Length: 245
Image 1: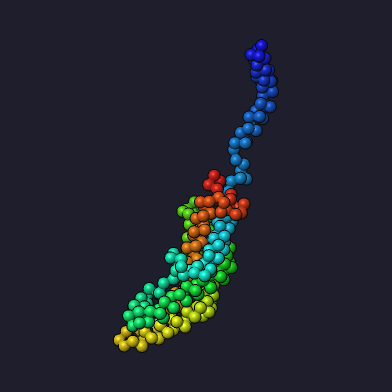
Image 2: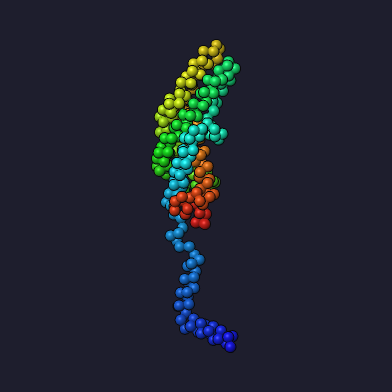
């Protein structure tokens, strides 16, 4: 009896589909629409650009906070600022003459200055990010885990150095780095028969501080790309979801 009822119901459905095919088609189309993403769910280039910039701003904010902590530069092997490369001979000579404390004090103060400057880095970097034109947003999005940071570095470093230099100079003075540096240069240049040195401390410290911050920004970008929980805005959630690519 049950089988007969099933046959009758199926027959009625078939007949209704033949009599009213438009309704049957409507149901099919409705089901298909559930499977096919809406066009407005796909990413647009402005959305990609916005998502990349939001990720960079977040990276800068968190990176600067880490760098500005005590020993944020000094005890981070990835970004610690060493004695200038072109002054290694100065460092070695002074160490051999029993002036290692002066050398160590200078290196510590140099990293303290970078930590102080990092406290004021966020607005400078954010301005650079917001004014940056991302010519190949999709290429940057689909690049490696730090491609947005690399793009930022390649396109804003010169402007960042110009804006960041006064901040670093002030930090060098506050941390007494300039004082130690002047003592080192003066004492070395008084040694007979050595080639005199007069490097640009501000330029060196600025470049190294910016490089260190970029390293931390890159780490944050990598987190955002790999960990959905690190995407703290709707735009980032949408842009860094590869299903939308």
